[in-house]
Image (cartoon, rainbow, N blue to C red; front, side, top):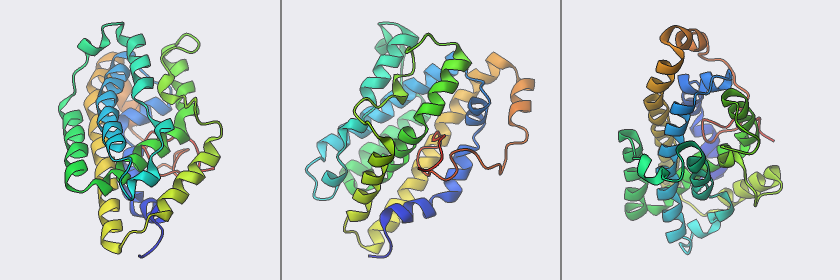
Length: 248
């Protein structure tokens, strides 16, 4: 085994993480421009992604390696359902369908769960660590940007079963490092994490159209013109590209 997995993932995804965190949609979000139509579309797409990931992680909870990363307290499906009910109404399940990029993401998760389930580690890492790290800041930005009523529309960012995120993240990384993996497997997991970042970027790209329609091309271009290669508040926390809180 060559190197601890948590470190290898952090170091091996730096470039992908930088590209993802500079996605135009995320940069607008950081500047407080959060528009309900594009935002609820993104949450709808996330619902399908998290449903697939969590179904597969649950199905493999007794896997000799994946069992060490079975943390249902991280799961987001029900939180997303709560938010989607707020944004779309009680019939939200008939209002959302997976976009093309979402379907590719879901298909990838389901395919590796059959062919090489250890690669689910990469998707768990890129989604949950970032969600847990950036939730509080993103929640505030969403509340302010969309003028949300107190406690409404932000369940995605709330982890009720995790009292101390810093401690939990340390436990999660220790679990990654405790996996007994050979070099070839570590390399496959890092490669899959880079693919996960790419799949996330495709989701963000899809919803940009609604955002541009809402705020106008000129404002959108102004907001995203000078953000390249700028260090963002979450640059030290590699995980989901929406991780907006420095590493603890």
